[in-house]
Image (cartoon, rainbow, N blue to C red; front, side):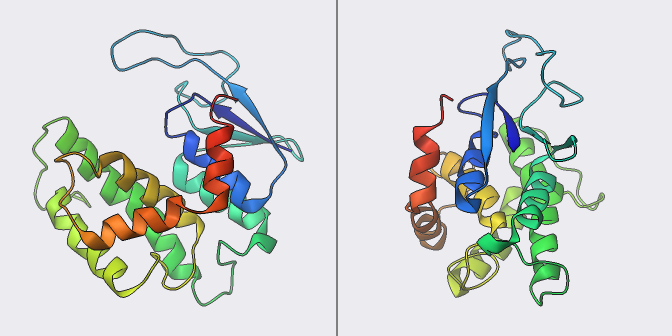
Length: 200
C-alpha cells in the first residue's frame, strides 16, 4: 500500500493521477502545509523533511520518497506492469531519466524564477530561462505525442500538469503542440479518476 501525503490543489494532486495510471493500491493522507501567504503549519504526520507535499510512504518496507521526479521513478519502477516507466535495461530508460531530471533541474527552476521575477544567472549550473527551455520541449512534442515518443510515461504526468497550470498565463510561450499535448494527456481516464479523489 502506498500512502500519498496530499494537500488538495497542490503538486501532490498529480500523484493521484499517477497512482491511478499505475493501478496501484493507495490511500490518501491529507496534511497541512505552510502556504505562500504565511498561513498554515507543518503537519507532524508528514514525513517530508520540510513539511511540503508530495511525499509517499510504501508500507511494504516503510520507504519514504519525496521530490516529484523521485516519486515518479520509484512508483513506475515498483509497478512495472503498467508499462509507463521504462525499466532498467530498456532502450528508453536513459531518455526517461533525462526527462525526469530535466524537469526538476531545469524546467521547474526556470518557471519559478519567472514566477518570482528573479533574474536567471546566465551560464550558471543548469539554470536557463523559460524562453530558453521551452523550444527543446516544443520541438519534442511537435515531433511526438509524448516526451518519450509514441508512448505515455510517468514523465508526462509532471510535464502535462505543469503546462496545464501555466498554459493560461503569460508564464509560458504559446504553442499549439503544447496545447494539444496537455489536452491529450488530461483526457486520459486515469486523470478523471484522480480528479474525483482530489479532496481525499
